[in-house]
Image (cartoon, rainbow over all chains, first blue to last red; front, side, top):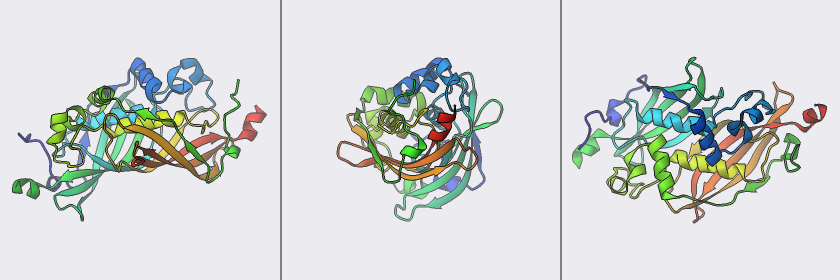
Length: 159
Length: 159
């Protein structure tokens, strides 16, 4: 059964914004993520972080990929809810302007900046979102543009 | 103590390539990652995946963010080894051209496509890498361009 809250291409318009709830970065979980996927001293250990030649670290920071994964979690929980799910076709201009530390509380804001039907697949379209992940001080910690594949409503009715 | 294998900006040149070992995608781990960070039915459940309106799925696929995280793990283990660690300044043109399924064996190939000193930070430079994650059939499953911050050798000697 389709959920009433699902959105089709025709439901999206340039300028719409969607915000998420908040997600607190747990230090132990951030270390476990880094141990599995980004095993570098400044993501694993306070002392190593303090001695990093990159002054942006200073104390332990979460892997940028942990921030990206948490951002996906927050996006899934927003009211974006494209029919069939959030399926990214690609990212551009992805930047991590500030580090994320244990205890930070992240949230996501995104804005629809483009809506277009697919030329090759008439049942689908693409929306482009500018996605910004912010910490508790409203500082951006991750930004990217993402193209998401969205179903067209017309096609669904023909099924 | 600095490891002898660490590379500084002056050690990198356009055209150099680096390859990784292999990493097998475990189905249970892929589901756990999705449950934590990308809880959508086609990443969690075979039956839901078969009924997805996105024909690319068909069977359960790993989250694209899991693929990205595994790619980071593989990059850390290559011979790239920039002094001070792998620190990405940003990604561009990130695409997931094919899904990743449990049992797939991934590896990474990357090529240096740009090497340049930083204008604002004389102790640092940037290298741009074209990074491709391939499955066991040598099909690309993730591609991106990444700018990495790399220390300059001269500065280290002044310390």
